[in-house]
Amino acid sequence: MLLSEKLLQYCWRYRHYNARSLCTAAGAPVEVIQPGLPNTDAGPDFMQARIRIGDAVLAGHVEIHLKASDWYRHRHGQDPAYGNVILHVVWENDRPVTELEEKGIPALELRDRIPGLLLEKYERLMEHPGFVPCSAQLGQVDEQVWLGWKERLVIERQEVKTELLERWLEETANDWETVFYRALGRSLGGPVNGDALEGVCRALPLKILARHRDQLLQLEALFFGQAGLLEAKFSDAYPRQLQQEYRFLQRKYSLLPVSGYYWKWLRMRPSAFPSLRIAQLAMLMYTTDHLFSGMLEAGTAARLEQLLSVQAGGYWDTHYRFDQLSPRREKKLGLTSVRMLIINTVVPMLVLYGRLKGMDRYTEKALALLQVLPAEQNRITRRWQELGVTHRCASDSQALLHLKKHYCDERRCLDCRIGIRLIHEP
Image 1 (cartoon, rainbow, N blue to C red):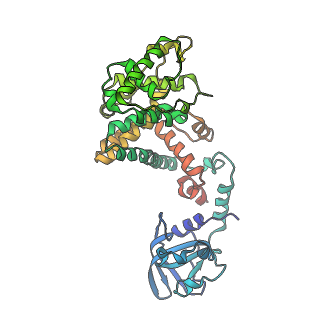
Image 2: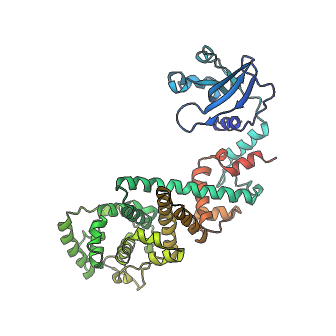
Image 3: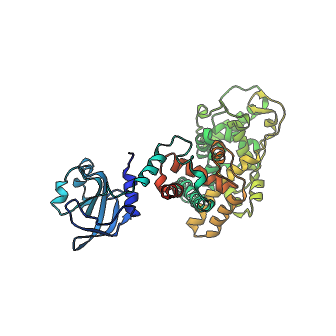
C-alpha cells in the first residue's frame, strides 16, 4: 500500500479518520478539539492545536510521522522549535519515543482508523502513469468544480510570475519602466533566448536608449552591438553601418556587450530568430515612448495589441540573419506573439502594480485581459483538451499550465481541488 506523510497530514487536518474511542498508545482517551493550523515553515506540522487527553485540555503543536521512530531519524529532539509539541500522531507506532514519553507527550496511532477506500484512491492517483494523475477519472468532475479551481489557479500563477518582477523592482529602486523593459526583453526572447535578451536589456540602460530614441539606426546599433552580434566581418552595407555606429556609441558610453555565443539558433522557427526579436524590440523602443506608462493607460486588449504590433526595420524584409538573403516578407511581430507578450509581461506587471500601489482596478484590468484574450495553444493545453478539459480563454489556459507544472507534475493531488474531489467521491 502506498502511503505518504502528506496523506497522513491531510487526513489529520480534515479529520478523515475514525474518531470513535480514540486513544493514545498508552490507552488514554483522546478528543481532537482543534487539529491545528498547517505550518508551511520549518517546525512542527500543525500549530495552535487543542487536544483533550484524559481530563486535561492541552494547547500547542502536533507533529505527524509515518513511523514513531521518524522522530529520532529527523532529530526533532535537538530542535527547540519542537519544544511545544503536545501530541505525536503516527501511522505506525513502531517503537516508543523515550524523550517524548519522559515529557508526557503521547503517541496517537491512526493505522487502523483511515478508510481503506480513501487509501486505495490515493494510491491509484499516485501510481497513474498518464499525462496527469487523474487523467482516467476527469470525466467524474463537475464543471463547477473546475470553474472555481481555475479562478484560484490563475491568481496563483500571477503570484509566481510577480515574484521575479518584484525582485527586479527592489534592484532598480522602484523603476517600473526598467522592470517592464527587462520583462519585455525576456518574453520576446522566449524560453530559448529569454535569458540572453534580458541580459542585453540589463547591459543597455533605458537612459542611454532615451538619448537616441528618434534614430532607429542608432537604436539597432546599440541593441545588436550589446547583443554581441556585430563582431563579424559583414558584406551587406546595413550591418556595416550598425557596426560603425556601435563602435562610436560603445566608446561614448563605455559599453560592455554580452557574448554572442549565448544566442541559440538551432531548431528554431526563423520568425523567432534572435536577430528578428532584437530588431523588433528596437522598433518598439523607437515607436513607443515610456512603454510601461503606455501599457497602464491602454484601456483594452485591442489597444495593447496595437501598441505591441511592431515590424522590424526594412533590412529585415529580405533577411532573417545578417548577410543571408531571404525571400521578401515583412517581419512583423505576429498577433499570437503579441498576445503572449500581453499574457506573460503586461498582465503580471499590472497585477504587481495594482497590488503594490493599492489600486485594485489594475489587478481587475489584468484579469479581465485574460478573460478576453484567446486561450493559448501549445502541447500542454492540447493534451488537456484531449482529456475533455476545456480552455475557452487565456485565463483558462494559464490556469491549466499552472496546474500541470505546480500540481500534477509534483503529484500534489491532496492540494488540488480536483484530486480531493476524486478521492472523496463515493
